[in-house]
Image 1 (cartoon, rainbow, N blue to C red):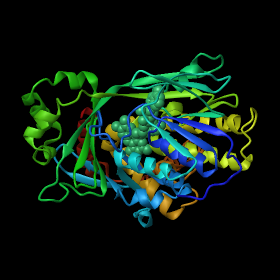
Image 2 (spheres, helix red, strand yellow):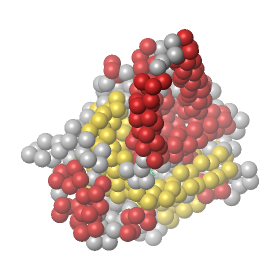
Image 3 (cartoon, rainbow, N blue to C red):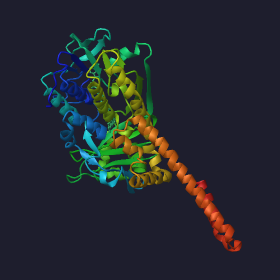
Image 4 (cartoon, helix red, strand yellow):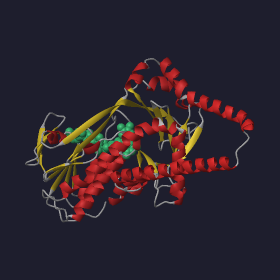
Length: 476
Ligand code: FAD
């Protein structure tokens, strides 16, 4: 447990939601010396025999690690994960090609780490419990709360109702936040939510002879334009494969034979690894899940409440940043608490948090949507692969001038909105340079041809061939 300060010991902070962000955030407030009450609707996940639904595994990167470091949890959590060094692209014919994430020297534990969601949540709750000024309340489902008084009403599974008051309420209750509902009733609250047409389904790839069935230190991707599958490694030597596909395509597959037909056509290399029987069974185990992107602002009401994590900004999972951004929310808030000496009155920390954080969270929501297309479609394009190579080359020779977007987002704490602005600027410069280079080369060739005109008769054959090739490529 980290040392606590005593400045805030009389104030009560209620963290609503004991998910990844809530559990971590509770540690941040406890470390500052607040009396922290964490309320979680479900039973204690550490004691639960069956956890409903999915077994999501998550890529933890720099922003998340920095947050964990603040409360002394980084190394303990990272040691429970598997480092990932690059993306591994699987073509329909089973050909493999890897796309490194960044510079060679970065390929180590400073890169992305694949973690299983449940053990991380359990660990964060256990860590939170070690603070003497922390109270964990499970089976407390928030029903209503007052922005004027800070009074919250919780429902218990035995039918009882409990009322509790807090000086500050921190809404970490996920994408369908009950805390956020109060915000929606107020004027000048901006809110939008978008469900994408794709759903996702998880399948397990078991170990082969006690070892990983594929190279473990990669994010494996099977891009198939309108849909894709990814696979992330787990400590128990399994891979969790996640199939992202439009709901209407999921619904078209209704029998085991159709599942096999589909996998033979698009992911043939995975059939022996997942197993035909498991595929036919697991495809129908749970329905495909929806994915929502939520944007809102402001993130606070007066001096009473602030939203963080998915409650403030649910993003689609294609940049692997939802949890990382939520963890970074905790650091940003903590940095402001430090800067403004924990002044939680109306005009200081909370509005400043909204001012600074909203543009960044909106930027990562947009980037996640952009990557939704990049991962399943662009990685198949030669132009995209060429640009990735060029970006990596320029980054290697000018690391301060050209930094690939993925590097800025995943391996730095550059504010997300600044990363996007810089990316647009870099694209202009690189595309301008390419255009200039191509024009220069064309002019050079033209000059040479003007000075030394070739024998037209000799060129006729090759030129015809080249022309017919170009026509064939164009038609394809
Ligand atoms: P949640 O995890 O949703 O937790 C909210 C908690 O609040 C829950 O425990 C819930 O029970 C509780 N709660 C809800 N309502 C109430 C109530 N009324 N009263 C009390 N408690 C309540 N992120 C990454 O960074 N990297 C990844 O690789 C990644 N991959 C992903 C893959 C998929 C398929 C998906 C769906 C998401 C992925 N994410 C990833 C996103 C990440 O899972 C979320 O951003 C993160 O879990 C959000 O944490 P949270 O604590 O804000 O919300």
